Length: 234
Image 1 (tube, one colour):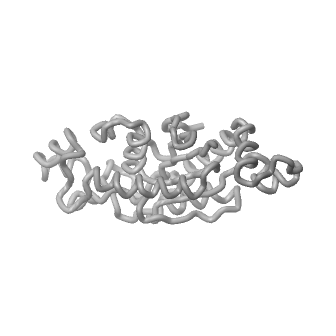
Image 2 (image 1 turned 180 degrees about the horizontal axis):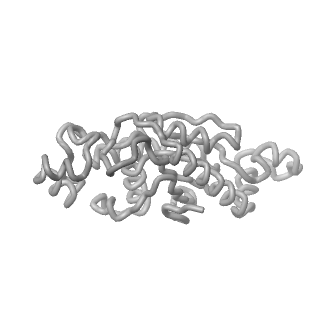
Image 3 (image 1 turned 180 degrees about the vertical axis):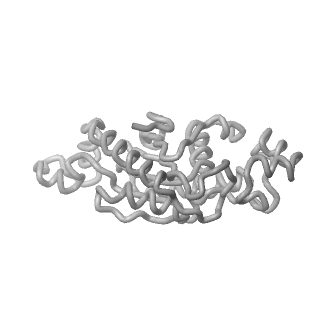
């Protein structure tokens, strides 16, 4: 049985300007961000349309006992072998709005999970790189060198974030075994999940780029993950 995960970062935020550690601050998407997610949604649709139908027929046999089902029944059960079966997102508005756009073509309502929120950056939240480096130079360098051992004052450590997001991922995969699942989250969350999926040390999270609207695709073959796409765009 194959479960396919589409892991997406939300679109660009209102305000623009210099890169900031927004973390758990609830900043909405900009019009540019909405367009980015619409493009990501179309890209996901094309990926689904060209996916190997055999794994969906196998899914139907395993889950629905549909070995002898008619084509009409198969289409009803699994959207004519194409489509998302569930959409999950962080409860921050930028992720929720992105999820609504991605879920709409499939008639789905996104499921909000606070566990998928971006990392809390504590006293750094809302500050730019430059501001943090000027006001907290030693703490910033220590965190940049080893984000696992260090965390912003009042913020979450990488391991704390990993614990909650990996638990959420495992729950979702168990709930929708054999399906096509979309998770819309944040740059930091996605980097941590990707390193976890690859079995890479968490010290490597900044080696994974996650653009606004970037799409990652992972196939779980009985929980053995194969990364098919990283930070993809149309």
